[in-house]
Amino acid sequence: MKIIRVADYETLSSKTADLIAAQVLVKPNCILGLATGSTPIGTYEKLIEWHEKKGLDFSEVTSINLDEYVGLDSNDKNSYRFFMNYHLFEHINIVRSNTYVPNGMTKDWEKECETYDHRILQLGGIDLQLLGIGNNGHIGFNEPGETFVKNTHLVELGESTIQANSRFFETLEEVPKQAITMGIGAIMQAKKVLLIANGKEKEEIVEKAFHGPITPQVPASILQLHPDVTVICSF
Ligand code: PGA
Image 1 (cartoon, helix red, strand yellow):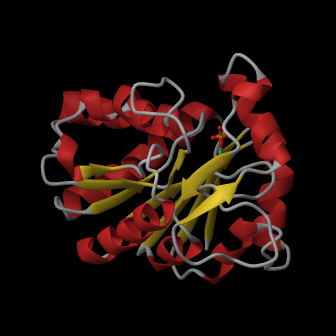
Image 2 (cartoon, rainbow, N blue to C red):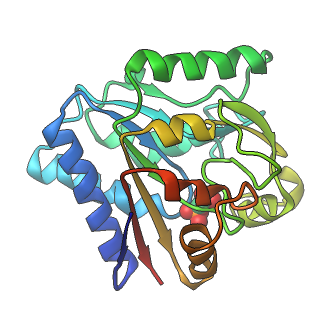
């Protein structure tokens, strides 16, 4: 595992974008596992610059996102499909039908979860998985619990996640209570993992996740067992 501490968010964003750009350059038809949240926004801005100024070509790339809220459709500004379109896909030449986000509007959760895992398998797995980390140690929406959950699944969001994410909504009540998330299995099977953490408030959880015991109470701690993890942090 490599932990890189950088001076500020700007540097975190450009370093992370450079590593993703390198993946696309080396393997133009790569499978990128992508993340939402505040932290990757700067990375996506830098990737758009890579595309616009240096001609980075996303035409053969496939992306597969970590998670989606239950009950928000793609036109809802808080849905993760909307986020991805708005912050990245609309600005690069990725083929929209090659971008996958779980369908939070499905009535058949089990089927949606199964299909998502099947798709990852069919794609041949994820080449590079980008992750943020929640204040409670979640990755994707794999919340602290009794066990690590391997497959894509429906999750009840924890109180601290609902609180943290309420900053994007008008009221706390509007924050969805459930989400569909990729499981720990697909994340652990990604060839490379890139985790980014920004701000003082993330320092303690990053310390716990990467220097503490491996426990489902801190889902990111499982990454200690992954053979190729880079953590980039600014705090
Ligand atoms: P953040 O979220 O980037 O908005 O801090 C990270 C996460 O919850 O995974």
